[in-house]
Amino acid sequence: MNYRHSFHAGNSADVVKHSVLIALVRALQLKDSALTLIDTHAGCGLYDLGGEEARRTGEAAQGVYRAFADPSPLLGDYRAAVAAVNAGGEPRLYPGSPRILAQLLRPQDVLVLNEKHPQDAQTLRGAMRGTPAAVHQRDAYELWLALLPPRSPRGVVVVDPPYEQTDERARVTATLAAAHRKWAHGVTVIWYPLKDRAAHQRWKQQLRKLGIPKFLCVEHWLYDSDQPGSYNGAGLFIVNPPYAFTQTLPPLLQALRAALAPEGHNGELTARWLGD
Image (cartoon, rainbow, N blue to C red; front, top):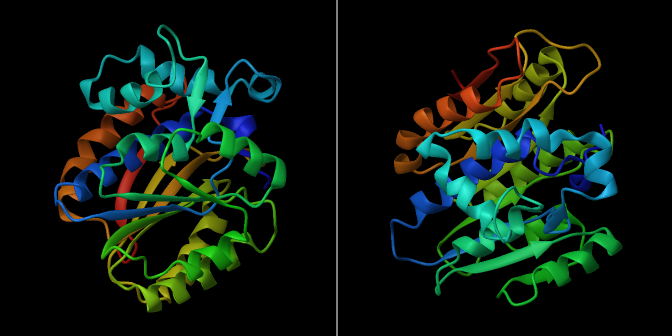
């Protein structure tokens, strides 16, 4: 599956991913010690919702625009993060994870971004101008391991591949295993698209074999049953989520499910431990 950020900016998967990411980082920032935030597949950093690629799919209508129309205060932090890159009114620009993470930085925190695609890396540097982010152009999986453990005792690695390659899940699994050996207490967030439940269960069986004890699965199935051959939702694997985050997550997910469920479907948005 080819999931280039620019075609899907502001869709339901982005709303869930960025809402959860904001909540996770803020929970970690309850402690004063520095965080190193690493985004291995950073993309362009900022997206034009009126641009050709975003308009071709029109997915923002079922994502960020629904979140802005929803009155739930639990989505307020997410709406504020998007509003910060817009002058007002409906969003015309959408911040990718790099711009959202940059908004969350405290003086003691560090942000490291990586994008292998040359054109996207150049765009990313422009989008991050004026922020303290360091931008790299390297193989994402090599960089993921090379930067571990980070200089600060605590940190988050965000892994958000386009899933263009048939071995993408295998590379994620192998690199996560090696990363956990180097940095067992580190927090890792891995985004993935959902196409069918059987294939996804097979991947989770492989991940269970890694023996990582604190492994949370946040899964957003948009429809009440799989739509064959279609994009059916997205999820996040979160390794070592902090306790404060897991306590605030259920009501956030309930608000997101209510805001994003397609017409005629209830959908499902859950958080379960991998071993359950």
